[in-house]
Amino acid sequence: MTSAQLTTKLRAGDTVFGTCIVSPSPKWPRSIANAGLDFVFLDTEHVALDRAHLSWMCQTYSRMGLPPIVRIPSPDPFAACMVLDGGAGGVIAPYIESVAQVQALRGAVKFRPVKGERLSQRLEGVPFEPALENYLRERNAQPLIINIESTPAMRALDEILAVPDLDAVLIGPHDLSCSLGMPEEYDRPEFLAACETIFRKARAAGLGAGIHFSGNVEQLACFHQLGANLLIHSSDITIFGTHLRSEIAEVKKLRGIRDSGAAKSEQVNI
Image (cartoon, rainbow, N blue to C red; front, side, top):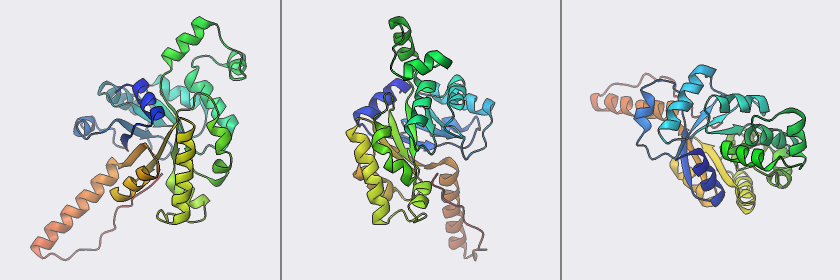
């Protein structure tokens, strides 16, 4: 799948699946090539990935037909341009709460490399010359996705969703649950109602609606039932830790070895 095809699917409401990839190991891409994914999520907000490693990962996954969607550390248009220059197949911007933030990111993702006064005029509605407009539309087909993860973002959601060229919204469940005053209570009716509202409004606006969730698969399926069509399941490090812990525990059980009480790996929803 290409980035342009992913954008089309998001807006059409087709369900797409991804996972968060933390490891920059050159052996890792082959291990997930046949995992049934449509894209990969590379997070530079919470994960320490340097620019060279990130670009290598983007180039590799792109050539595998898995668009690498990169979350930048902050809603900074220059950071968005930087990861796109490195090969990102799309951008996720964290903790968006205003139209102004989305407009700035729209300029960086959809009208790159134009900047400065000409970009400001375009964002205010003054069209470019037809040749330049067509060139930029063809060149910048990568999806622009924003994180909705606070109550102020929910209050501004209708205005945010009306910004042209936005392709999808993605719930950050951990931050949203904290903003709602119910940290990590992902099965609370109030939290699920908030998610459903975000999904419904995004889909009604013709945009993709998603969530990144590291809990059980039944709950991820529940989010799909509530209206999400952009599903990011867990991460490589979480799945590895969970599977390894389960198999080591099974060996200990088979051999009657008492568990040492080692610390459990943490599931993180970011």
